[in-house]
Length: 81
Image (cartoon, rainbow, N blue to C red; front, side):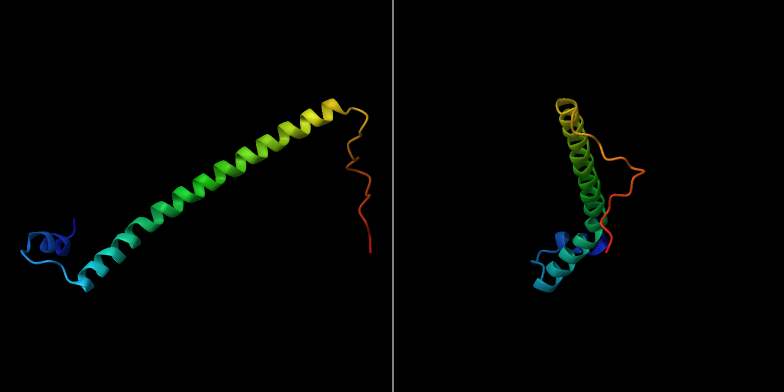
């Protein structure tokens, strides 16, 4: 704990609203990078899971429908304006 936090706890008085706000803001600033990192990791994991599921579904679909041909990557069938 930081020194000013100890003062609040050791004092026989209640902390002022300003002191509580300062502590709250400090806590947010201290935990934000960790929370941001955790959320980034979770997002990456979800993205990976979606990608893996999609690939499995596409593979299963291709195996169940062999008559449907994959597009030839060398032939340019894109629409041109």
